Image 1 (spheres, rainbow, N blue to C red):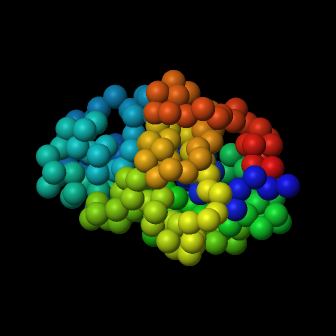
Image 2 (cartoon, rainbow, N blue to C red; image 1 turned 135 degrees about the horizontal axis):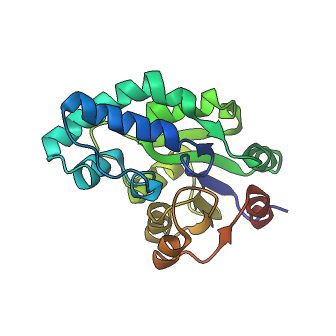
Length: 216
C-alpha cells in the first residue's frame, strides 16, 4: 500500500549519477571566461545548490559574471554534459512502482527545466513522470522552497494529498521543511547525511531498495 499520493524527486544525486558531467561543464565554463577553478573534489558543494549560487559563492564570480557563466554552462551541458548522466541502480524500479500504485510523481530539480527534461528523456524514464519541474535560467525560480510549490501546482495538487520530497542534499531537506511536506533523504547521492540531519531530515534511505520500502 502506498504511503504517499505525490512524490517529488530531486534529479542529480537521486535519480541520475551526473557528477562527472556537471564538474566538466563548470570547469569548461570557467576556462572560457578566463577564471580560475575552485576545488571541485567535493561534489556536495556544487551538486544540489542552484547553479547561479555555485558560480557566485564557490567560483567567486560577481552577479553579472555568474549570470553569464550560467548561460555558457547551459550551452555546454547540452553538448557535453548531458550524455554523461546515468541512472542509479534500482531507481527505475522505484519509479515504476510509483506509477503502478498511482502515486503522482514529478522531477523537482534546481537544474534548468529544459535540461532536466532532456536528462530524464536521455535516461529513458521520462514516461514515468507526470511533470518535470526545474529552475529558470534567469534565477527567478531556483530554490527548492520555490520549486516544490511550483511542482505541486503543476500537478494540480489540492492540498489534501500526502506529499514527500526525495533528495540527497540539505537543499532538498530545507525546501521540504519550509513547504511543510515530508522528506526522505537518500545517502547514495552527493550530499552528506550530516548536512541533511542538520537541515531537519529524519528519514533516510541508503539504497534505492530502502527508498522503495519507505514509500510503500
